[in-house]
Length: 339
Image 1 (cartoon, rainbow, N blue to C red):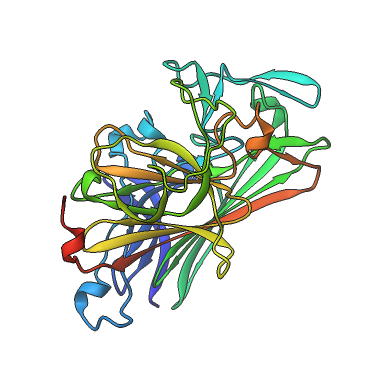
Image 2 (tube, rainbow, N blue to C red):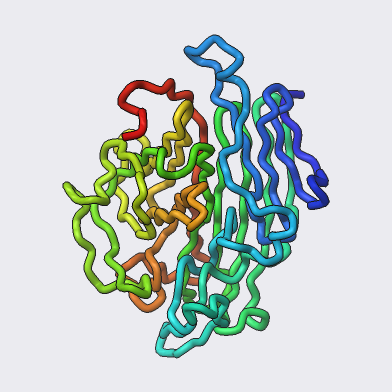
């Protein structure tokens, strides 16, 4: 059987590994760390290439070192539920009531990136055959265990490894008797072996969410066309800093929005479903060895600015979204050389 999904200990870390035994491509998932996609290595397939290089696998995601997992620097690979990005002071107002979430980013005084990123997920089932490996995990967010968020949610994460791609599907269901505020997302960092400066980004968008010096929305959503955040065509990153939410334009042929990070000889293609992932947050962390390409259903502080993507999820309703990631060979041309 070509694919396998099984527990595996990697550098002392207990994971569930989805593996393509033919190419070596693999996804390591951490149930005890909020269903984190810890490591991901993919091949490029074989169509049209006819060589072993096309089939070989390479790292796609930048991962925490084993000793960093508890400290969680940068939320690498974490699931962002029931909110993504930041809520200043952890305070928000919903349904006529004021709530206060724990502040988990002391430097900014914000609550950031949800409530499940460090929770133990349960395994629902796994399966593998000659076409794919699949794992499903789940977690129940209970009102009495979530300070500042007294709502009942069932979070389900499905992880799929195919010969040509990795897919993550997130489903959140309101199991309570009252509406619940919800946004969701994923926080993968695309590793750039030659450094971010030499990478090129393609990320078609309509607008960006303007933020102030504290990275909080100003209320303006200017168009990107013709400006420095216009990534309709591939653009070299260079030395610039990026930490911004782009409001995406969907591709009619797929119903999704695509981001391409060209890394020299290959490219990582991430496609997010629309809806619910209305935004892509692009962020370059200080080491400049990767770029976060975050599919998110809302921009930062949407709990206080519902026009930025907050979903009011009624009892029994659910929100679900899918993200796929693949590699493509990109032979370097003269136009790709550093400028």
